[in-house]
Length: 215
Image (cartoon, rainbow, N blue to C red; front, side, top):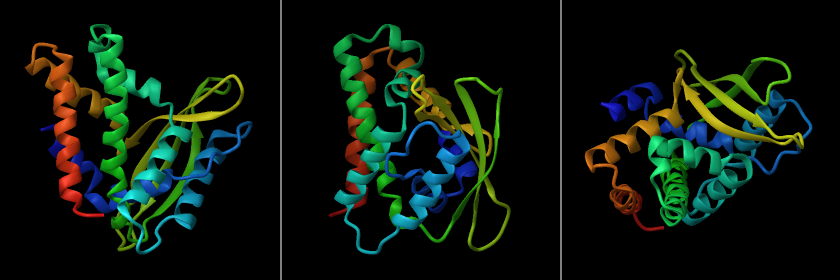
């Protein structure tokens, strides 16, 4: 049910690819507004990424760099594990963080090839002034017309003024919450066994790699 709902909201791989491309950026300087931070991410993505002939390995390298440079990955990793984070051993947490990074990298990197001219626009910043958390409202325009797709960014600003993405909402649905629900369902079915979830993520990584074909 979760996957069907997510697929309905995201409307296929081409839109996900637009999201991925909108996320790419060289490290953006801190001490700027969060709306400008997100806008530069999108502008740089569309300008720099969508070359023909890029290899799968290069896509994965670029996406991993984006993930590490612009996302608060440790915070997201703990969030998506949900209540089971309290029962995981340090070794399991380390393994989960590594596998989660790999899964996100190979899953979204393979969608780069689906980019078909979608545009990303920042609309406005929402939230309380002075709060460490901000919401930047944006949208993706489809080249064939039709209603744009809402893409909102939750940004955490650190004490040093730098910004990191902590969540994305597509048509109002949080991707972080969707992932947490999916992982929680796997753990619930297996009596909270963290190793069972790790095995499931490894298997999913293998399936995605197999579906991607040769480099």
